[in-house]
Image (cartoon, rainbow, N blue to C red):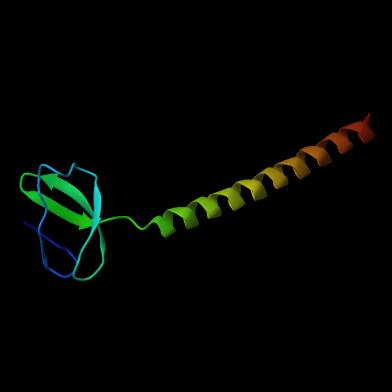
Length: 85
């Protein structure tokens, strides 16, 4: 037996059928849970996949902005050098 960290419901989990890092859902509250310990079975809230996807989207947008700024600065520097000669 394991305890849901969200609603404190008892969840029947066979310790031989799960590995550390496995995910399951609570039959009472529906929370996504991750196995964090095996003897005894310990559960914790699983990280939200949506948050990971949002972080990746934000990172991609930030990198593109930085690349564009770098290109503009490099381009301006090349033009200035050409005119100075």
